[in-house]
Amino acid sequence: MSQTLNTRCSEDVAEAVALLRQGHLVAIPTETVYGLAANALDEGAVARIFAAKNRPHFDPLIVHIAAAERLGMVAKDIPEPALALARAFWPGPLTLVLPRQANIPDLVTSGLDTVAVRVPDHPLTLRLLRELDAPLAAPSANPFGYISPTTAQHVLDQLSGRIAMVLDGGPCRVGLESSIVGFDGDKPLLYRLGGLSREQIEAVIGPVQMALNQSGNPRAPGQLNSHYAPRTPLLLGEPALLAWEHPGRRLGYLAFRTPPEGPWMTGRLLSLSGDPEEAARNLFRYLRELDAEPLDYILAERLPDAGLGAAINDRLERAAQH
Ligand code: TXA
Ligand code: MG
Image (cartoon, rainbow, N blue to C red):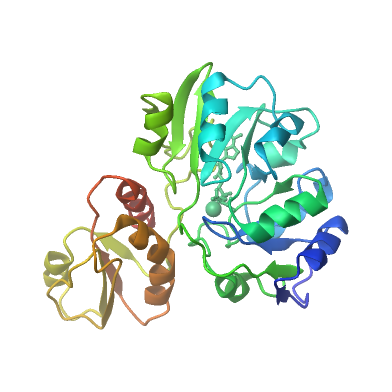
């Protein structure tokens, strides 16, 4: 694929529609993270997503639609709890894994007989989906394995020259990828913790079983352990103690609300007021900022495991696995 595209960056939905109709890639804003979108029914365009991201073909994509009423165009045999979740949380940070319609290309689903689908909650992207009148396949708009982008600039930093356009919708409101729920018959399974907490999901459909993916789980092949990783080694634990164990190193901390003691070069607090939602919004931006410093290690602490804290801890654990 050409490395020399002149990547446009604007709020122009009509331009994004025109480019997508021609089979080009456009990065789109959502409430969770920026996605790298192509027309889901255009197999050639979908192939370009994998090339631009260096994404392996066994990692399936999420299909984005304009409204729950259009679910029947991409999925079928939808279990009742899935409909209840769609009614409660769409548009929003929830992806449902459902039996797919035959028109969805194999490349989108990695040959699985299911498709992952969601209605994103961002006004520009909802307008784009309505005007395009086609579903958009979009993984997060980062090179495979790196931290997801939460601003248009994050996308440009890594994909400029490889994609036609970034539709600039400002910083993402949630800041973590969507939570992914699949079904074994009618039984719900939580494949990925994300912007919708387990507690919120269970308030609507009752207890869900965690099926958080270790690599090799055939049902969600993309949930590899080493996702979301900065290039700087990240150690997860008690930053002040970890700092003692690494004397003479250039250290940065990532803490929840209180600065740890230690000989830091730099550091970030996710939320001074101790709000997990604010922490989620800041997480990927701070990881990128720390990764840009000349550090030997990023020393990070876990959050309390409730609400979005559990999803943040999941991302930190994956970032710590190099
Ligand atoms: O918030 C989000 O979900 C963002 C925005 C852009 O919508 N997208 C996103 O996509 O995070 P991505 O590609 O980074 O993660 C999608 C994950 C894959 O890693 C894969 O594990 C799972 O969705 N997935 C997709 N199709 C699946 C399927 N048929 N069965 C199980 N898991 C699936
Ligand atoms: Mg991703």
